[in-house]
Length: 303
Image (tube, rainbow, N blue to C red; front, side, top):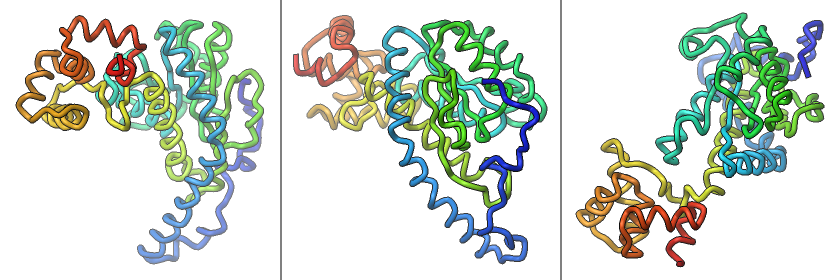
């Protein structure tokens, strides 16, 4: 699985020269924007071709989550930042514990705001980063690498395989579709970038779309969404309090004041508040009923 340092990177899909933007340095600002927009328009179709693989990855993550496992995103540069971003959005959106989905970036937190070139080339650091998070066989490790060869990422995937964790790779190098030793490969053929090798562009957009699908799909399957409403949020800010009240009203027939009263009784936990009000239960009883229904609000209300 380890990346081959002798490979001619000029042959990689993410490094090739894009004929559509060959003269971009002579274009007006409007023409530049037009070329970029036209290239971006192809990204959704490229992702669509990988939906079967994405679905397998969602199922794999759901299985690990249901047994108490965690999801680790591992990447460098743009890929690493996108992983950290997706992980950081799970607690406010789905009410998850911060450890449930974690992002690991080569170079550590400082690399989120400043390039850490060179850190991505150390495979041992990727393995060490997983060790430091206490990764176990019950977890899933998702490597993110536009080129598919980043040593830091492969070091982490190798370590994950060693300990028996589930593994996946999200890449824009479709030559790696059948990569041995990895449970699921999502290989998105976005083609060459507008600026050759600048994978923060189409590759970054495609990666963001796929990561959204992984965590959102898994959280839906885990019952953290009712209809298309994020009922597992915790009302910890003005925006989230307002959203919680609106969702409570959409699910029940309560008014604003009554909605907030129930949410306060539930300690800001929206799903608990809904079950309390609709089923005439205490906070503890509502929590127990949801646990018996695997967190599925629809099942809890049907009972």
